[in-house]
Length: 419
Image (cartoon, rainbow, N blue to C red; front, side, top):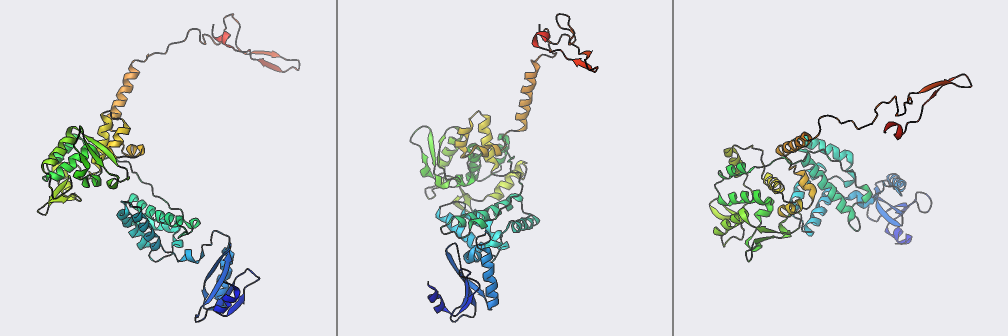
């Protein structure tokens, strides 16, 4: 718009300085003064205040920020944390991400803490205050990290948009709390047998046994349907689609041995009104999906005399450890359990005390065949003072021409030491 057009909008109140310094003006029907300025070819207009002095002060501030990282513009200043969170959820839904509900849960306390505040107020110091408040509320460090990481994801997605919803150079540093995330819970076969004896529901019992044998995630097992099972050849093949996996990578699982026996047992109780392979009876209604069975799990642990802190996910760790102990290579074990990276196997800490004890026994066996006394090599440093010809190898002292005492160190070579 030309300058004449701008003046037609309202009475100009004069330039702050020379040409290019911007101006303040008043729109028709508005009680506020507005400012106009241009930075790197982009023109900006925004409310300046109720008085010309306030408008001039704000305009000077904008011009001082021009060309620096402190300038975000009126649009960036209006973006709130709630808008960034909503934009992230929309993006994840469009991408078909399965973790939308988890991210929404992680963002909820963050949005409460930064409710109504501009995204520019989210600084590293503000994030550390948020972490301190959550820790004081007895939240686990891992939980707080997930919440902060969800907010970081919202900022990064907003900065990648075209045009950016939020300037990239204003994205703060997101601190993380130290977390000991090494997985250490395992089930031995005797413990699983004791646990299953106290699970009365056949569907849940097969559900647990399947997890212990295959290492599949709880959500994957709960979504297995009969159309994924191929019984046309040998072995039977379970085709797990990417849509139900956590890492969105499909895989196939050949069924033999105990795993096939579990599947054959499920075939005998198959319900044609329920497509799920694993189902349970809930509130007197058979064929219900298996989602939350915490009460059944907790009561079975107590009845079997197992630690109350054991998790269902420990079955996954146990299955991976069983495969490794059985001599299965890590690549094949990852295909069975659905792990995508080897680092996840390392985090499961599959080396136990028994295995480290066996390693020390093997070290003892190796040392047992080593000589117990050092064997001197023939002729090696037989006498540091005498060589084979009787010449002394000790330092010789003499008087030089200047009268000072000089020390002569005869050269020592291999012929003198080894002969």
